[in-house]
Image (cartoon, rainbow, N blue to C red; front, side, top):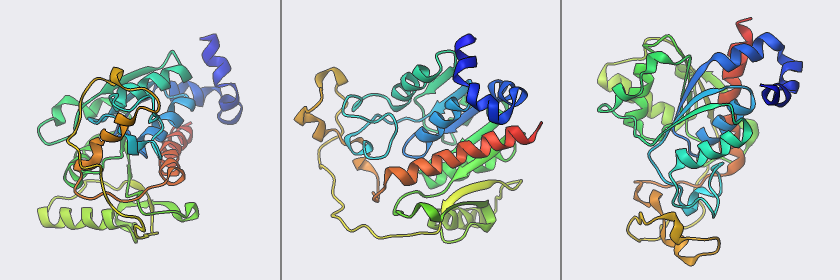
Length: 267
């Protein structure tokens, strides 16, 4: 406990002791710990969240290194949530980090007990699964925050927060709204989103390594190992767009900021 008090001394100076204590009592779950979710998790733990569940089914691939917190040449091949958990525990060893290597889908919703959380954060890429999480999260008592698309962006000053139905200039938000209208199912309450109305074009050649997904143990790899180039787990995605670390990190930090701000506003 003495170590935690020292870690959060400056946080307490700004927020006050009661807010820091309340922050440590809140339960948070993040769906998707890629370019946005990984930075959100880091910021939450550094801000005093002690009970955090991180959900992602992927392993670290070489192309994650440019923007994902736990992705390095040493972690390629590792399960993302496990690599991130290891880092988060070096920040606060007393934190309770639950790492779930799972996909949030219609078949797995019961595995996550959404009603047991105070905050639910959406950083999912898949449109169908994202829409489902939005619908279900908005049926709980938890505060819910969502990230819209962070790819194809460069200008940090364009990143902002708005209520979902007021988000403008974001293709993912537009696609989600069309999905809800088509299905005739709508979120039962309003929720805030982090987004940017900037939309650039890919300037480089959109190509992947072309190899089959390799799932061999990480122990076979080391820094500088040329076989790392053959480990492209994300190459199976239908569309791959360019991304930058400062954009995805700001998205993640803003999501974390919304959580901290909400907790502080309750005292």
